[in-house]
Image 1 (tube, rainbow, N blue to C red):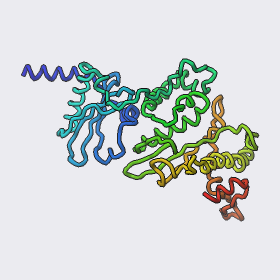
Image 2 (image 1 turned 120 degrees about the vertical axis):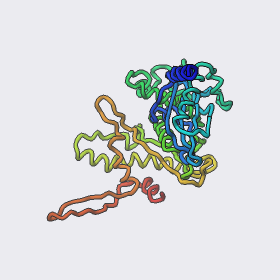
Image 3 (image 1 turned 135 degrees about the horizontal axis):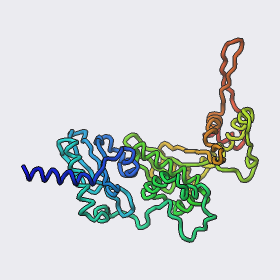
Image 4 (image 1 turned 180 degrees about the vertical axis):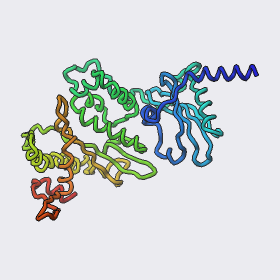
Length: 354
């Protein structure tokens, strides 16, 4: 009995080296780890980490065999949490959790974590979104990137970007520089899309074009990201500043559909050197193609709300070329569809074609 009690006390002491973490925390740390078939193969039950989150792990149930396993994840040389060890065919979730916590304790007290996490396929230069090169001038940094980098209140966002960066393998070698300087909005939109597709359970790769190739057991498609940016020239450079409900209605009916139309038309008309459209290129050629658009043309801040919060109504006007109007006539509600005829010839041609 004395030996059994001593072993139990030792186990309890070693369990103090691990902690349970939430599914949302695990999802962030392992955002690029799971493959899309995973939900069809096992059911995740519990999530654990050491006290400093140098290693993490999960307990899951095999949906085919109805038994349990645990998986230990350690950061690889690029900083990504990836599978380092698995034990399966365990009789219960509780039994698997005890074994996982013991393995976590062993990892942080005995193992060389750098060696344990090495996978052999790491790149030499992992993507670090927040590391500013020494030769970059402070005035060249985008104002919003500086806010992200320096504001104490943006610490949670910095933690998220720290986890996103190592998983990104964009074909564009200038991605990080543009995120930090002149194209912060565009690159932020791409980062948001990548994280969204991962959270939705898709496998995501980044070919040369379009921006994303998305695959899962549910299907396959490609995505090209685009944004509405401030116009520097042309008719749209004279930006309205609506202050009344009537001015806002006119702004959404006339100005913003052209903004969205310009961004979408540019992508629809773009061709490669070989004359191929986005949907004809890359490993997803011929699969459904998505244009993901976000409006960054008027940023928020200083008490002002950003334009993306109120301009989406204008996108439907452009896409469908019509709006709904309603009125009451002698107490009876009348709703009618009005076809829009305001599109300039170039945009009208594009709208009619696509």
